[in-house]
Image (tube, rainbow over all chains, first blue to last red; front, side, top):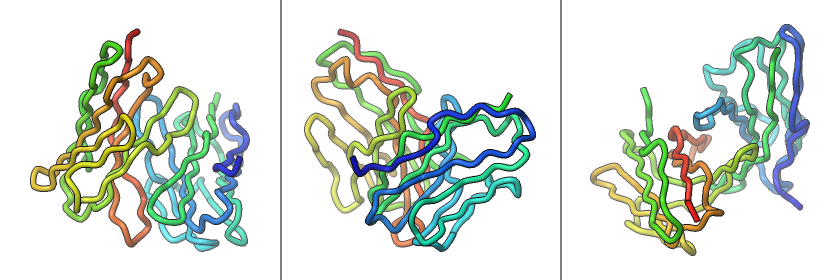
Length: 111
Length: 113
C-alpha cells in the first residue's frame, strides 16, 4: 500500500511530557501538510511543507509545536510540554497536485 | 470567522434515499471544492472535488452541484447505502499557493437499512 502512513496510531502521555509523531507521505508527493482535528470538528491546518521547506504555519501552531521534513521525505511533528488541550487527532496529508490524501492520523490523549 | 459553513450537522435517511449536504463560503478566491468522507477512527478520504468552471460533477453515486453566484456547493449521494454512514466534510482552498484546506464542521450521515 502506498498511502500516507502515520505512526504511532495512538499515543497516551502525561501532561508536561514531549511527544513526537511521524508521517511518511506518498512517495512522489512533494507537498506535506499537518492538520489537527478535535472531536466533532473538521480538521484545522497546522503547517505546510514543500519538499524540505516549511512554507506556512498556522497561528494554532504555538511555540511548543515544531515540525520538520528533512530531505523532503518523511516529516515529524513534536509537541513539547504537552497540555490537556493538545488532546486531538493529528492528521498528515500529502499531495502532488491539488488533491490531498490523508493518513489515518495519530490520536493523542494527554492525561 | 468561519470561512465555510456546512449544514446540516446531522442527517438520517433510509436506504435508497438521497441525502444532500450543503456548504457555503464567502471568499471568492476559493477555486477548489473537495468533499471528504471520514469513518470513526480513520483519516478523511477524498470523495469528489469540483472547480468553479463547471456546475455539476458526478462520480459513481456521488454528485457535486456548484452555484458560483450563490457561493454554495452541495453533495448528493444517490441510492444511499448503510455503508455510506460516515461523517462528510466539505472543504475549500485557493490553488497556486499552499493549497491548505479549510474544512466545514462536518455532517454525520446515518443511512438506516
